[in-house]
Image (cartoon, rainbow, N blue to C red; front, top):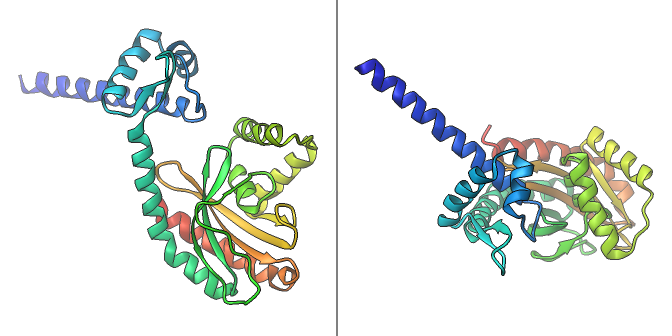
Amino acid sequence: MEGDVTRSDKVAATGGIQVIERAASILRALKPHQQGLSLGEIADRVDLPRSTVQRIVGALMAEGLVTTGPRGRRVLLGPEIADLAQQSRRNVVEVCRLILTELSQATGETADLSVLQGASMIFIDQVPGVHRLRAVSSVGDAFPLTTTANGLACLALLPDDEIMRLTNEEWTRHGIQPDIAAFARRIAETRKRGLAFDLDEHTVGISAAGVAFQDRSGGIYAISVPVPSSRFPEVRELVETTLLKTREHASRLTMGG
């Protein structure tokens, strides 16, 4: 009898894990699609029967993890996901605050923390540098991905198909005709070095270096150091070395390892 109960428990546990895995795959499928997906489109992406998807979506909807569009035909990530993401972001800010302070003190320059959100980089924390002439952005500012050090660093952590989706969206929005081959080489170099650079690309007179890392929930963040271009050559080596150490520290702390 005891053996039967144990086997039953194991079967139940296995089934529960499978449901969680399937629910997670549905949430991940919805993540890149701000306009939502139909049940059939979700089923195609997660390779599950439509009836199974409908059942899991119903359970997720009851918990506020997904919702439906205005006409009820498309499924979108729900408000509870945004609340969870916001809490995760607050935790990253708290963990990284000391890291940003140490980075700024070591370089004398401004240290920024930003998060990849949709097709933009959103600044969520900053420690200003000590120089009178310094580069400072505001928390809440949104920067593009393809012309900024923090954006390029985050893109380099993504799969190639996701990179192209996000960059095409940005290029189309701004009417840019890019050199795809040159951009691919730039991403490859960023992956190799672990560092990305913006040399007067986003803002004339400002250069920057940046690194990126992921937290346990899959959020992608960047730590960057913007510097007036007139001063960048003299501090570049120090900024690069310090940023790479900072990335290791941030990744270790936010991943809990």
